[in-house]
Every structure is written in structure tokens, then in C-alpha cells.
Image (cartoon, rainbow, N blue to C red):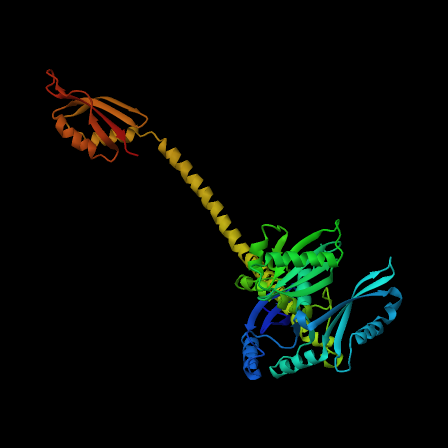
Length: 465
């Protein structure tokens, strides 16, 4: 299959690096490849670089569109409630807010924000501000550059998960969902309401014997924080991450509205990759974030000076390739049409050339049928010819001189003769040899006439036609 778009999501999860690729043409994307690089910060950069290069090279993937997802523990998340009058200068106002969170010059943040809602009725703005310490991200980007990775965007891994969950969903308005990202030792809970992330918190798994109590407790905490009152309804709890399937088995009986993220993401998943979806969900969300121009939550923590400006001209080769493919498909269809028209023309010419011989053959056929009918008529006339004279002539020839007939009868091809002869036993072979007679049999009893001294006979035969 030819893919016109490729995007790769890299999620940093604990000590591991998870890489997921999403490829597509005119569809919503196909989950094509996944790998986990364990202990990436504990190994030499050269070793990690070789493993990453091998993954990209063996799968024919490009490094031009990589979105990096950093863990929740490295992100500072704040929700700002601002008057609507500041909307025209919102960027500057947010900058002032970020500076208020920076106690010292060395403790600086990279940040980005998204407008959650424009409350026209309340004349308030709700803004989600996401920050990461400059030192943390700089160190991470330096390491990634050493292993051959240069992301076009940096965001939270959980934001990628939220994006893939909200991809083209039409049932978000007025509804609240809880997303649970379960690692091997931690749980991050996000609340999504009206298509916006309104709450996010990560907690360690602790020494709990199971996930059920922890998920229920954190879901209740999220509902309390977002002020989900008695009339509010929690639509679903959606689980992702390595431990999600285990947690799902524990919780599904008590919470029938709980489901795994693999059942509600809008990307094509080949059969061989289905078992990878739960652990790759956030990475797929990051790849999806880099594939579309307007993801549900658009945030990029990469500082402006480090961002790769993707000109619209970068999409020209893919567009040209797509147009070439369409042109080839059109040409193939036109070629087949032209071939069919040429074949039809050739057949018409051949039929025209055969028209005169066919008409001649048909005339011969009609003439032959007429001759056949005439022959049958002649045969019928001949079959009705009176054969009595010929039969009598034949009998006169084959019967011996001492034999004479006393009776002769012919009817419908059956002949009966009777008479007297010196030796009747010699007559039967002679009659059977006649070309005009067949099936000659003796009728009645042969006896001798005392007056003439001859034997009296009666024969029956059929006329040989």
C-alpha cells in the first residue's frame, strides 16, 4: 500500500521509549509499527541511536514528522479563569501568568496554552496552561538529538491519548469521560468534558492489591474537582496503558460503562497489531497529533526557536504523487475504455466483411432446404407407385414351370400368394432371394391335391422398398 502521510509518536514512559507509527493516505490513518526501547536513559546514546535507526530503516519510516510525548510528572498543568476582555491580548496575559510561576531566573518554563471555552454568557475565558521546566526539556532534547531524533512538536503523552480518544467523535457535547492511563507503577486520570481536558492527575499505584479501588477513588476525585454534581453523568471510563487489560478485568463487572481504548479509537488497526494497541495508545495519539492540522487539543511545548517550520510546500511532493496516482488510475480506466471501443470497431468491421459470405451461405442453405423438400416429395410419389406388375413379373421369373398361382393379393405392402407346385420346399428359398420380397413365411398347411398330384401352398411376404 502507498502511504501519502506518515507520522511517528514517541512516548517517554518511565525508563522506556515507546515508538508508534501512524500512516495514511486519504483515510484516517493505519497503525503500522510499534517498538519499545527499554532503559533508554541508562544505555549509551550510540546504542540507542542504532536501535532507533534500525526501527525506522527496516520499516521504511521517515523521521521528518515526529511528535514527542513527555510524562505527566514533568508537566505543570494550570487552569486559568480570565475575563473575556483580555482575549485580544491573551498571549501576553498568559505570558504574565507563566512568569508568576517562575520563582527564579534559572527556574524557567517552556509553555503553551489552549482555549477551552469562550463563555460568552459569563464573559469569562477558560484556558488550559501547560508548562515544562526549561532545564528538563533542554536536557531531554539534547539527548534525543544525540540519538538521531528531532521532534517537530513536544506535548504531554496524556494529551496525545486524549486526542486519539476524541478523534472525530460526535458524542462529546455535554458529556464527561474519564480516561485512565495505567502504567506498571502509576495511574494518570484525565477528565474530558465537552471535548476539553478539564482535569489531569497522576498518582503512584502504591502497594494496593489491585487497580479497582485506585481507579474508583481517582474517578471520584476527578468528578469532585470538576464539580460534577448529582445531576451530572459520567459517560464512560476508558482505560489505556500496559496494565489496562488487567485493570479492566477487575473493574468491568462493577462498572459496565468501562471499556478499553482499543474499542473507541478511530484508526485502522491491522490484526497483527491489535494486541499492541493498549500500550501504544498514547504514542498513536501523539502520531495523530502530528498528522492532522487541527487536533482536538493542540499544544506544542517546543520553544519557537527550535520548531521546524513545515512549509506548505513540504506537502507538494505528496500531493503531486497523489495526483499522479489518480492520473494513472484515470488513464488505466480510459485505456480500457479505448481498448473496448477499438475492439468493438474491429468486430463491426469483421462483421461487415462477413455479411456478404454469410448471406451467400444462407441463400445456399435455403436452396438446399428447397431441394430436400422436393426430394422428399418425389420419394413420397415413388412410394405410392403400383408395384403389382413388377411383383407379378418377378414371380413369373423365379417360380418353376410346374408351379402356378391360383391367388394373389397386395395391400399396404403385404403380399399373399397361393397355388400349386410340384415341390413347395424349393419355392421358399427362391422367394427369399427375390429383391422385391422379404420376410417370406408359409401360411397354413401344405398338402397334396389328389386330382392334380401337386402340393397346395400359401405364402405371405412383404414388399421390399
